[in-house]
Length: 217
Image (cartoon, rainbow, N blue to C red):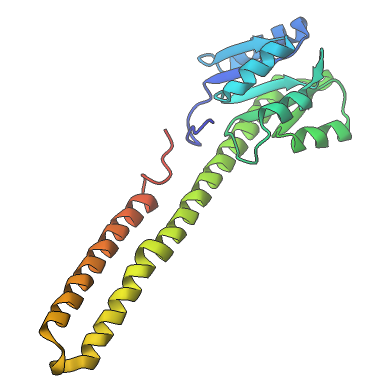
């Protein structure tokens, strides 16, 4: 998974295309647009599968038509989960085909480009759009996980002790001055323990609600 912050520069690309001539063109354009970024490239389908399994690139640029498989099939294999990986994906197509574009987006691509109308400006916009969408999707997923964790923590670690504390205090109030001293002390000891449990739960909530719950490296 790629948990890069939204504003972190794009520093790594994976280029998958079995057309060596077009790979050369993309290599040249990427070198001009992102001169310090690392580029990994392959035209081999099996090598592409291995590289995609790493899932730690900032952006993947993949051709639709590959020897032995389509780019869509490779994406479906590499990203079968509904968990956003945080990697921007740009699909390259030989011609403007709406069905291919829809299939690519369903398979996890964030943007697509037609090779015949390829330009540096259009490529740059597609890369920025794809990486921003991927990072936002990943961050939203992580924040949702944190929120669900907070909800569970409130229900279990705070709700239970608070309910027990309330019951014991109400019992003591009803008993008034006639309450047995030993029973009073036992109730107070339990109430103190529940208070400590709630204090610990609040510390955990503060941690989760801050940087500790959804930290982007």
